Image 1: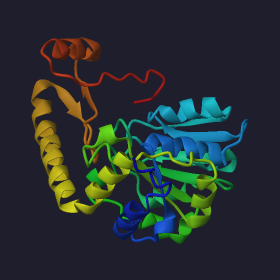
Image 2: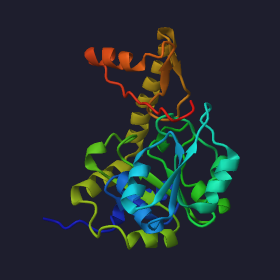
Image 3: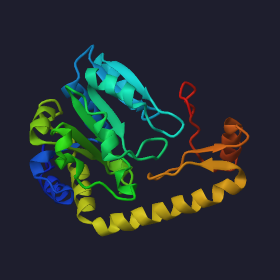
Image 4: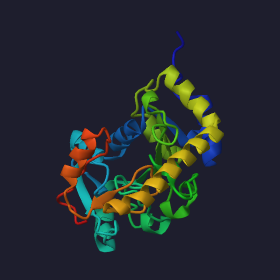
Length: 276
């Protein structure tokens, strides 16, 4: 048996070329969820504050609860935008500001100018790019090199979506080496197994296949988005691999159950305390 390398050196070399950074900007993880766990443990002590746009990825709240942190939701309006004044207040207290971009479950993307509004005064801004490869213009490390973020942005990535490799449980975080150094002290020594590292390295090396896979998924998304309005659905523009839809009747639970009976599986989501 071969012991897994604790730093996945070959993988980091390939990823660093794609994101135009040095290998010491990258730390591997057992799925991007582990990256988020390590970030929470590294940069937010108990009784400090984690913030995130809402509705969004609810794991952020679970991580805050485990760490004993406070969590504050930055409520989004019906256009999936936040109130700049509320964002400014949160910047003063948040030690970690999580932002999925594209957002889950809405699929919208926020600009660099908007993201600047969320950089904590004393903390890190985490750009959760689980769906980043599906953007119209995929991010390749540009924001990490943007001086406006003062070396305090962390980007997290996964192989579960655009590479269709959810089963290998592999992700990685990208940030300035000073930030990565702090995360290295917190993560488990051998958090990724040999098979996962090998699979991720091979997948990262074959960008042509990933782009073909991405193109198929985007074609399916566009075909579905064009067809759904004829059935009474309102479809929000998406830059992810899914669509957020509502129905004119408002009978979403009933529609979900009817589709399930026909072996058409969708995700039924409710955010009763969100504005949209």
